[in-house]
Image (cartoon, rainbow, N blue to C red; front, top):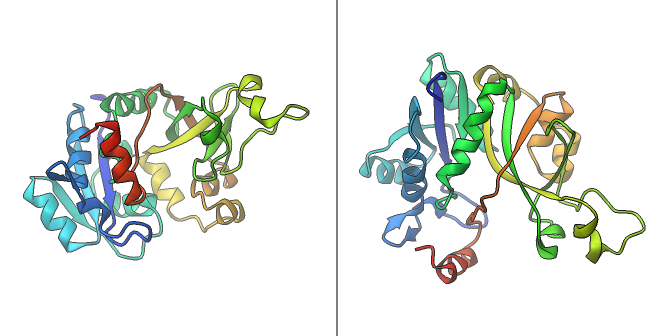
Amino acid sequence: MHDYKVLAIIPARFASTRFPGKPLVDLGGKPMIQRTYERVMSVNGWYRVVIATDDLQIKQAAEGFGAEVIMTRTDHVSGTDRCAEVLELVGESIDYVVNIQGDEPFIEPAQLKELVAGFQSNAPILTLIKQITDIETLFSVNTPKVVINQKGEALYFSRQTIPHVRGVASELWLDSHRYFKHIGLYAYRADVLKEISQLKPSPLEISESLEQLRWLENGYVIQTIETQYETVGIDTPADLEKIEKMGLL
């Protein structure tokens, strides 16, 4: 990473529909956003690490534990758009921007290292994928799936199970094909981030509610990197109980 100027951005929204105030929820004595920030900071080589938010409570909390905070507009529909605004506000020459969701307090630092190792390829957009090994995940519409070509570039993302294995009972699909789920951790070349933030929502993106389809529809290459590490995101209050049962706190 030392050959590149890498800006790590942690977008954090207060007004989540499924879990309002999520970044500030207490996880073992620390707000979620602090745990995410500390995981990111444990990786060496970032040029800057910034928490991007539109909420003053999150700003105050983040500054309280020593983070750099940049206030962004309130009308962003995605973390990518928020990252693009931060890049513009930073106003410096940056090579890559890494987007780490604020609700990933248990992200493995090793995953961040896997992602930034992909910079050597000069890929326009990089993201992580992980092999699916259980039926529940395979058929969950809450888990985006991805199919890739022989170079590891994404061909398509879907909430549906792709590909469909014709003539094989669905409970045997995992034995017939290697399936991958998408882990929503992104790195963008800075010039590409500026371009994709100008794109209008696309038909496939609107259909699946997956912003990365907008980039594919507009001809951008998304290079995937396979990780062995599991992520434990927190989307709803019920997920907090799951975290406690897993003994992560």
